[in-house]
Figure 1 (cartoon, rainbow over the protein chains, first blue to last red):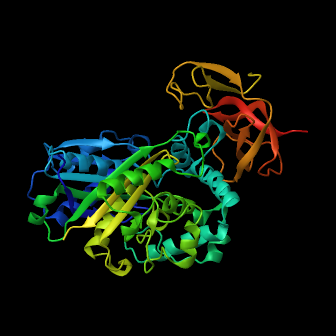
Figure 2 (tube, rainbow over the protein chains, first blue to last red):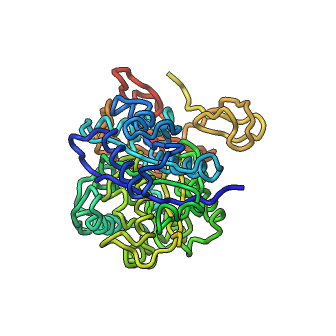
Figure 3 (tube, each protein chain N blue to C red):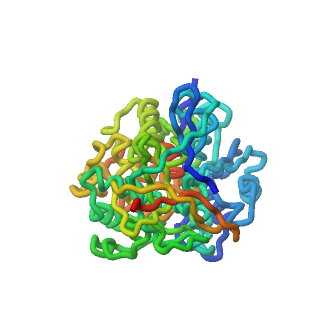
Length: 388
Length: 113
């Protein structure tokens, strides 16, 4: 019998170019913020999970979870780094959930962080591309923008999606990011700005792609029954889903159906015993703006091929029926890969507690996060609910 | 040099796969025959990549996904000047790029003249 799990604290750093701070500095900052927020500074933690993709490659440091418990004295808590590409953060949250749900741990810290700036862009682009299939994709020159571009053109051929829709998602997420003090990009953009930005991988322009970022985020978990001892506003993890798909994108039965998203979402809704229409706010993995639309369909919010209509009608704006990415998403908040899955949860906790400031969604009760790893071959979905 | 672009046909259920898997995506069987994917395919999607990966000489790099007559698909560099979805192509053995100063060869796709 699994125990119910609550999120009792959250913390996040500024996202962007964090000059003078290394990976460990930002993981420490986010973790201490989360522990303080939970009112758990005097308590002993049982386990620590750290989502990160590229510490060894970019920061020349390994075993970073051991380093983190040392820096902030969580010794002797168990500690491990979780690597699952751009879904490392979501995987870390899932592991934290299991630790509490199983009864093995009563107090858990989940952190996620990545330090990606200060390194040659070609190096970052190449390291990210190594998550593609080595012989069927990487070797031919497939970078992440190229994968997203191939995906986008298939979408445009089949449905009424146009470049203007991608621009509209970017405009919305920039507007939301402007209201988020942690966001990397703090500037409004217009549809025309987006449509005239540099071509990265036809039909994808710069404004339809997320930036390269530093940043970290953290949450503290405990059994739901004990949550009120820490906070008057706990947030419950109602369910999660986690599924995979073929490594090579072209091998999928229908390449524009994100099967790993579909299955992970179905699992999460089943566990939470709710439906897509019960969700009040969502954070989706828009590393490329096409993905916000595709995920919103495969999760079940909108019919396949109609996600762009919701964007057109303002349904996904902060004051719409289903706000998506009120944080600014990966596009404007930034995408420090290992941090993203945790940062999505932090944003939704703030939304459910009614503490999201200018970007607060009205009366949010239930929320969904989708963290997308690989090019769609490893996806996590979490569903959260306001605890009181 | 390879003469033909090869796929892997499951000895049990007959499913043809590219790239290779150690267990069949259809039935989990572990034995395969190497089979030619054929000389003709058509383009289903493409991109012109301006942010070039290292070791690539073609600028912009045209990448695409092709589908062979047996429905098996492959990703690769497209040599045709004006790619259009639906256009007929054929695999050609050529240098793809250099990785760590080593030349890497494989199949690209060119128009049928």
